Length: 226
Image 1 (spheres, rainbow, N blue to C red):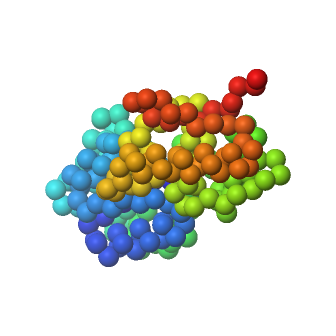
Image 2: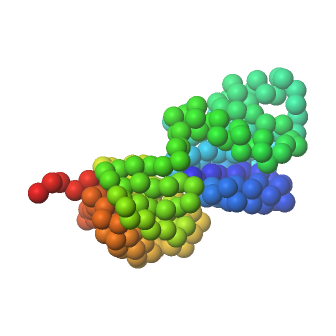
């Protein structure tokens, strides 16, 4: 799950990032409104956490521009002000939810879960494609009576491919989703982890395959019966 945090308070941004990473979210952090807009327009994020008061551009303007540019990513606004009029302005600008500082980690996580459910991103404990199951709690991959544990990046790759099975996913998207926007990961990193995952799929006797489409990306699909 990819989350963008836009918060000019560096210590708070670090705290938010730590909370989310401890709960298996992949996080990118920016500290001003212009960067929030630039990152948000990439469309790779599942949720954007957006502070209202930021330098260069405030959060209300950021979310308004994102919506005008066709970005529908769920936005959770953060503010130190609790006035109803401020919340109305945020929601009218295009935000999906609103939280007033300070808040607890549990409250933050609950708001994120609600946003994802609201936008059809319900994540169950297990994802299935063909005879393959991916356990989202313990990162195990299994098929029939065989199970293998995945490393964190193998798991992120497997989840991305399985939740978008039969769709071609570009290498650039894989790098952003699995390694993060600011990562220096290259195509050979993607190719290496695709190879690792293919070996584990073969080990458990999976009836799915990861296809490489030249200059396009990768696609996971169920193998055709002989």
